[in-house]
Length: 423
Ligand code: ADP
Ligand code: ASP
Ligand code: MG
Image 1 (spheres, protein in one colour):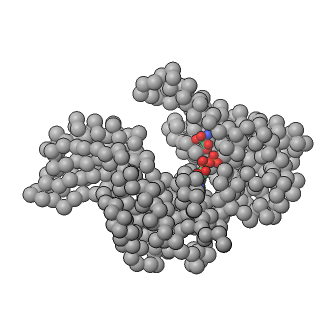
Image 2 (cartoon, protein in one colour):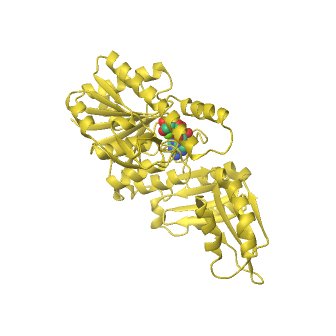
Image 3 (tube, helix red, strand yellow):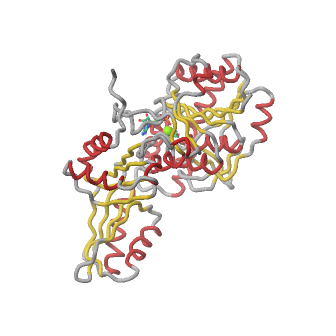
């Protein structure tokens, strides 16, 4: 008998029929003798619908008070799906109880819309599990010190599930979703992508941070920190599939590098269209430029990703970096109004039509020339690389967004990431 956490995403909870299927699947696991905790997302589309309603009433720039209410509102999506799942389980004859984040409580920081989990009280949950109930805990939300409801950022139910699993020292967190595992690249965009039976925690962390939205990055960070065994699998198999078979399906996130030894050098490709490039041109090349530019950007709470500084010519240099699209206009204004005059730079220009394409693999640690091969493949396709960023196990390039598909296709071929052709 094990303590298992299941997480079901929005599509998996998308209708009463789907919720009934989830209930049957969870009841099957409970009948097999496992203690079950379930963390559902809101029904698909619901979070967007709620956020849209709020925007209709207050289309302008959000204030702090607005963000508090927005979290209050968005959290109702998970409250509804959790209660519906409890009702469906009870209808199956399986005792179940649902809790909103604040009832557990799941304590978080008070950063509305991107709160971080500080602690989870396990008392109530354990008592219910001991009483033979399935415990359902809303994903995506918690409560701050002042008793305000907070949310954890889009896709945050993954993080709720792994955090709950860590707090309960669960045997495994199973992340049920609408694809049957983690693929070499997004299988909805690249049908030829291949499913990985395992992926190392570090690779998953890079894939998530580089734009593969199958798992929210913070859920992977939690899994790594607390060594929570974690698996991504499909909720669209028949609910009565053999449990032993189901428990081995999908993709396991591993912590053992040895298991990966036989794997390819590059395990996956991630791509991301969410970033925009900003360049400050004609900056006098003297110590402290990076600090003056990026310090001002950080003070405005804007996260910066890829950074390059060009070689200076005639005492002047260009400095470029990427930010999220949401912060693009704000960062341009800030630099134009304050930083460019203070630095005596020539001008600031922006390009929102870029994308970042990355290859990821722990094999890159032990193989030389992987990044060079990536650059060669892109040059053979005539794709100009605007920026490069590498770490021990990944290599990312920023290119014109119109070349994204071409780049991904060429890299898939070059690094052997497609499914073998059917015989
Ligand atoms: P859920 O609602 O279950 O949380 P998400 O939409 O957040 O589901 O995540 C699942 C989606 O992630 C898939 O439908 C797929 O399009 C996308 N995805 C992106 N990259 C990958 C990848 N490398 N492997 C699998 N799925 C991926
Ligand atoms: N419902 C939230 C969202 O749509 C959280 C989640 O699905 O993980 O972002
Ligand atoms: Mg998700």
